Length: 176
Image (cartoon, rainbow, N blue to C red):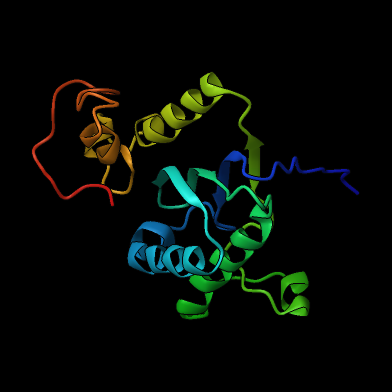
């Protein structure tokens, strides 16, 4: 059995990678409104701040900051995953283990997290989040990807529109 330990820091900032069980699926972008609603509902009940986020078809990356009194990101992820899953029609492949536990087969069971150590660490992960659609070949420029907080950062003057790719894009229908 894996001896995996999570690093809990009350009020900490964390980088997360959360993936679908079927990495060839496109559920996250196909149902982006369902995912957004799941985040909104859980954030009302269990607050946290989304510092940066990108949603790709089969996985997402984000940086969160938790309230000072808690380090419980696991419950938040469990609830977000459940909220999203319950809103989708059943029909995905499920292993015997998942069926026995009454689980859907939408998400990978685990997620990857990293407690951010300092401002440089924070900036590297925010850059990674925003550049990810280009890294995966979905777009040539960061500003072209519609499911990202990149545009928020541009509006705040933290990135130029051309960051992460050549030239500006045409549309304004991006981000949150």
